[in-house]
Length: 429
Image (cartoon, rainbow, N blue to C red; front, top):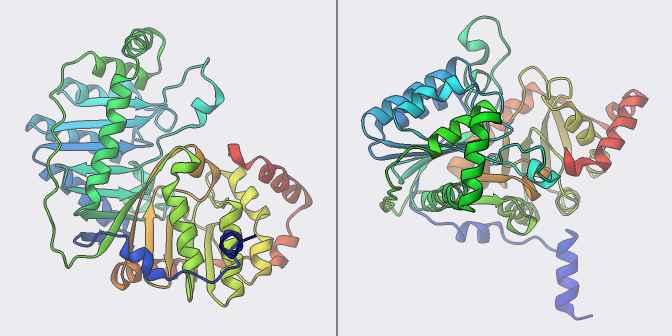
């Protein structure tokens, strides 16, 4: 075996020397304006401001739009934008927004808002169709600025208990507003996905439209109505250059296939390059084997590795929480710090490596995000933005409790057995 082959195998299992982290920074484009948004109220107000000030186009990909106070307020903001002549295109996921009533979108459609449904539910569709979801949360304004986030639109993502009424606390998450070259890739992705929903097999689209009018879910009927209306053509603006002194940022997209899982690949490269610290905060933590090995290898070469997870009692997908716990012992034995956060649901998908490289967005570290879902993250290189993300992660760590091997052993036997079973079937969780 050649030395080059041995080096490749060694790097694959995470035992080779770390790459230089600044090499990742050099692959990113400079010249961005960026605002990290860990505070939900600030993020909500900025989102409404961007909708209110858009002049030509608003393009949205969203997994879930909830028919509650903030959801209705958001739709009204889109209606107001459409009435002043802005072309508004909204794509929701067929499962994530399945229970959204038709009436919630009625006025939006009446004023000429365009609506598409990704992955509508068909009882005769194969399983792979059901598991492929558009999990992105992307808002693009006039083709030159965007918000990329892990937050859907609904009360518990932005308002929570702060809105009164004694409801549950607002979920913990991240988002970022960006302007600059990275937006161009978001524009291209949204434009491609929109055209794919509109043009793929015109006869089938027409058949689905007619079928949905009678038998479809409320949001399928909303799409059928939107397909039957005339809309103005998509006008993609040229992204204006931002100052070259701005931070280095890149758009990372998972396209629903392992070979196009760019977010997952960036995580793996960053962890293998770490020399000081790795911080991860994830709601659904089922990392692939290569990333597990890279985390263990980083810890064994002296890198501090911190993993923040929601407590199983507050995780909104309990099956994923139990499977995630089953996979933790190998990390704990390597000296990796694991913390579980109770109270509000930790819904973040974020990382910081060596206080320089950072990423936030919609991509979980689980098989669905890596192999089946459409996802969007921003990644950047630089101490300022990395420090902002890291400060928030440190605040969450202080509120969390350590998860140890002793805690692992104290689980009831049935939880351990169920966790083992769910871990074996984690590809479909």
